[in-house]
Length: 181
Image (cartoon, rainbow, N blue to C red; front, side, top):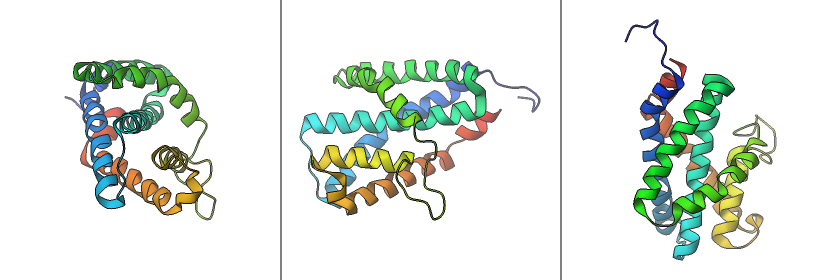
């Protein structure tokens, strides 16, 4: 491809969509394994499915933010509609009921996460109302069925864990580069 050619949002979705699908497939299961292995947390199947969906929706939201920054509102809409269709097709092929939960909670989480402007706290600022912190609080409450403040160590571990997962995916793939083409 010539450097002067720009990819359309639909073409970008064809390239990035599989990365989103793979990340949404891999990350929740690795996270649940990490919880069991490193934190000694065992989840029943119902809670595990909710955790899987929450992790998928969070990852989807991260890619949505990246798309908005790189493509603008209109391009982001085309891109994310295509990525959503790819992700949903993958979930439906598994027939686990997760696809329905993903659809049910999708818009709710997108609206909720959109309120948190910053991914992480700025230097010297509180963590409250930042995307990764609020997501970690949500998961901690879901996993422990208690107030997240009662499990500060787990809350902090989740914040670090998901920060490293997202940064690792972005470093190992050309997502940002593709979005900006």
